[in-house]
Length: 460
Image (cartoon, rainbow, N blue to C red; front, side, top):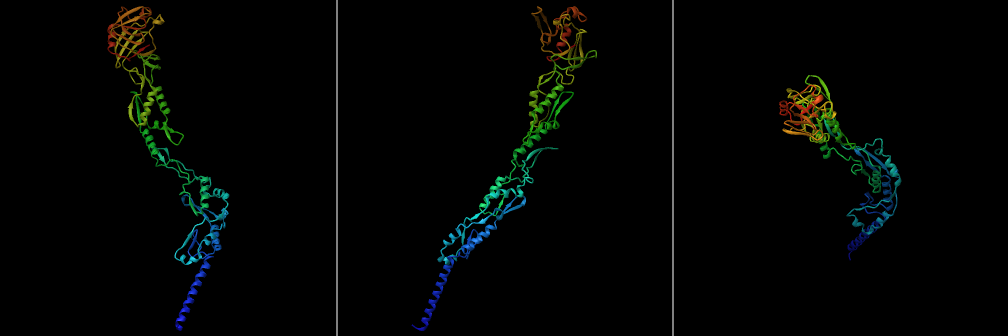
């Protein structure tokens, strides 16, 4: 073997020994150090011993800060020192290093190693509640409670008032969120994103709320006019707005009792049945009348229900109340222009048609000396029936009297024709009727052809 070959072989051997030495040396190094590119819980621990990696973990734990993102961009922090947090060596770092194959260090050069371990740490969990209570966001004096969107009365009607988001928090929920964040070593939580703020139950976008506002405003457009001929009573916005009241639950309702009071007052002002009324006689005198069965009576319950329905629908209309009893004339003077007037003292009767006297006749009324036969007086009655011809009978007085024109206005008491030789004067004092108004035939005929059922008969 030539000298050159020997030198070459010696050089090659030395190189192999050098490489082997480097390999073995590196293997021995990585038996106590992490490979380059090793990351534990996001910390670069490459080329570090277990003690160095743990020191870095300890520093990281001690540097821990939890940032709490609050509403309106505000943030608050709680530090590891406040949590009394420190690193706790639980042997996991050594386990990772021991699990590393030092002889495979060359292969590790081609890839990084990323490990996640449950970072051993200790902290005082009992202080979390106190720390959360001390946050500015938990200050009861500055905490604004959420408010539902609601309806509100304005100058133009009902409007939807937007909700108030506020900044109120449920302390127990926030404490649990912080507790979980610390457990997971999260560095930031957002109270907004976690949905921890108390929320209004009703928002201005609520379709039901808008629909209710429309419904209430529709009621305010209603205008129900009750026509009493010479006067009107109107349920309009001014009145209806007072009927819409707070329901005690943040809303408004139509107070049906208020509508009923409106109808009650209307009935009080306009009902005439059985009410005292002033009457101007044929001679121009004024007499006060009370009694009889003539006049108007509003059916308050039915009228109230009809009014409520009309208001709810936003109706604009003129209507009449629903009546239990009706007269002939709806004006203040409900007797009107067509009626019969009987004066007991004068023994005279007048029949008016459209305000004009068409009959002026003497009559004979009930026997004045017998209370059971006296003609009722001091009131206004309505003609109850009309019959021609008719036969009047009485078991009490034992008579059967045919008549041609019969117009009862108070039970068995009525106006009818009768053949008599004497009329008016004092005849009724000694030869009066059994309560009826005896009338000359020709006059009774005119009256019969003028009046109708319901025509008022005034007797005084």
